Image (cartoon, rainbow, N blue to C red; front, top):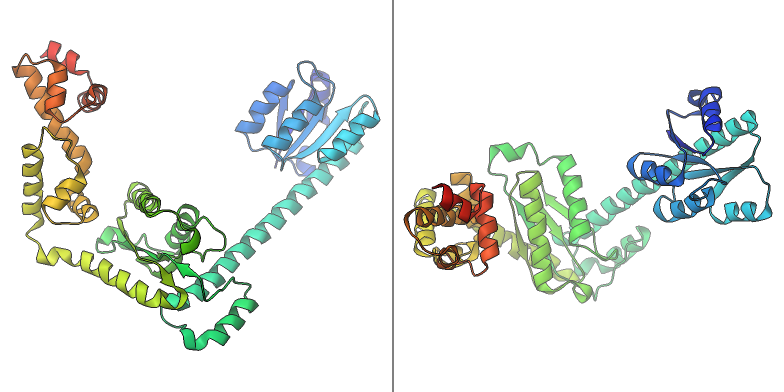
Length: 406
């Protein structure tokens, strides 16, 4: 546990640092500041649990610091030091959550008792929050299992009375008239390198991500793990985000997994589904996921698809070609196409498109006298500054510098 001492009197700080047996009262590290500017920097950059601050200081008082802390770091326990026992100070301390108010000259035993009191307060707060968090996680697991029973078909309309009773006992909001928008996330577990990642820790993290990104309303069922590679979210249809926003956020989740876990996930969005239609809707989404997973069986070899992609890019250098447009030309899902291309080449398709265009730009800069803006337009870049930015990113220099050095 860490403590910050704030006082413009150096002798006071040094005395407290030396005389108080900090380890004995529960403090691991002491930070010091002689003004509130330095104090704020420490509070924002370090892990501080307790602050002892003088009131009367130049360039901002301890009261100013306490007021600022109420907005920025309200959980830190605060103790005030002052030479004056003014009623206004005591009143301010009470209103701003100050734990103790110590008068100077300082009684060292009083300071030790105040710090012990503060340490106990921090520990109590931590314990309460830990218990709340643990209870919250327990409630989420109970709620997840409740809604999972709908997704797996364990609950049906015949079980209505039992469902109502269970919902009441478990304090779960249940209304048979609610409708949902099922979203199924299918994680690629075919690659051996991914199989060890799909453990309980990953499941916990991924469900939290889905709860944060996809499910905005607390009344929504929590994210559900149907299997190590299948996850379901059920945002309430009546207040669900727009389809485009849902799609955008689902892509963010998929991109996050790809970036931080190197795991690929496809997502499938259903349609308006009543409570007792969740099972059939999930089954349809699972079939879509399975169909996509097995789609490669009916396709030409991945090598020939990559060759075709390269041909399409070369044939469309003058256009702002995208992954989605290429996918349409080879009759594949864009997410699957990007995954296949990356698996075969080690490169993201979007990055490869830029690389090919920049190679052509370099060739034209070396072999022609065309204006750089013309080359930019001929390569599908309507925005010249965007072209220059891409060129510099790939080549390390601007188009003009490249031409001059060629």
